Length: 166
Image (tube, rainbow, N blue to C red):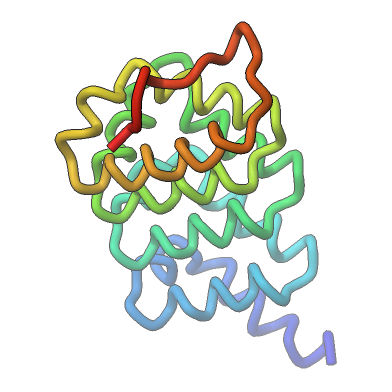
């Protein structure tokens, strides 16, 4: 079977950037992320790295970024989250308010290792008041509230607000 799929996958890898943005091609890339070899998944993740913000704001590519976050190796997942949480909050803030990218942030919160989830939550916290004003920001706040409810109280990690988030 690999001898039959290898030429097809080689072709896909040459056109990943275009396929992830295509209304049908994105499904092909998602399928590889779900069912492909670790090497094929890794090639796709590497192709998208460095451009997560832009792909996350795209109607079709955002679904692929979500699959990357879900199906990447732990190391690759950490790199994708680090890209969004980088040195400034700009990418994270933009994504939280975006109609497509907010789902990528929600997925990152869901699948992040606890230390990275904590970092995401700390990075989001200063933006709570602003996020309440955005339809898509409210989705992020609801997701965070779910995690706050399951956490044991810790002095360094108090709730976002004194009352409900929404």
